[in-house]
Length: 262
Image (cartoon, rainbow, N blue to C red; front, top):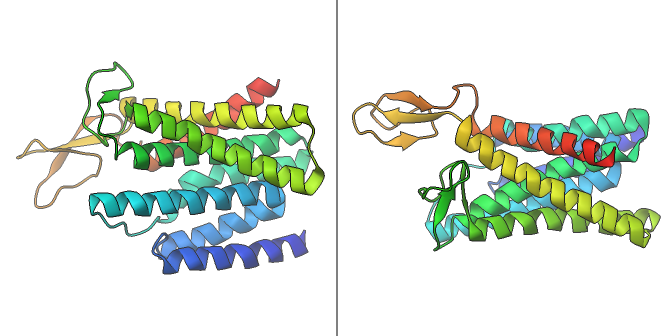
């Protein structure tokens, strides 16, 4: 285990440093990503770690493209955002190491597929020229608001989940070989459960995530502040931030994976 931990630390440090230099991570995100990557590699091996890196690289590229299109600039993922997307995978990786039951490995990867599905849906969906609807009641919604879905975003979310499934299957085939039955089982479980996790994310974002309203302007925001203006909680629960929604949806998708297997 010590050797695996050292290898995991080394390669996670390199990837996190490159991401930090590219401004995909801030300082706290860099530290947290290095620690999580080390844990995931140590206990989940190449299968989970490789899936995590595939998510991080692909989602970072898509986010950069989206920001360029909308002329926005991100400060990079912080520690909370990294934990929201990687903590569940780390927990199930440890469980897999302890009990050596393969379904926990799949549950770890499904949480990553959920994060990738959500990121692709949000970033690609924001470029949609079509209508956007609230997932709770299918009424028209502003583009980019939590709990809203679009045709392009939904298609992108399926592709995002399928992409992680493909990475996992490819790594599994290289390491162990893979039969046709496992090929379809792994691919189906990861793709479907990852996509379901994204739908859960949208539902929680629309129902429980905190949204605030500016006292003077009436402007709605998911942040706890507006420039030069106080805000009040307009809907949702104050403790349920976007990061909390991401964490809960990844956990829910992983638990659904266990139920499917049973």
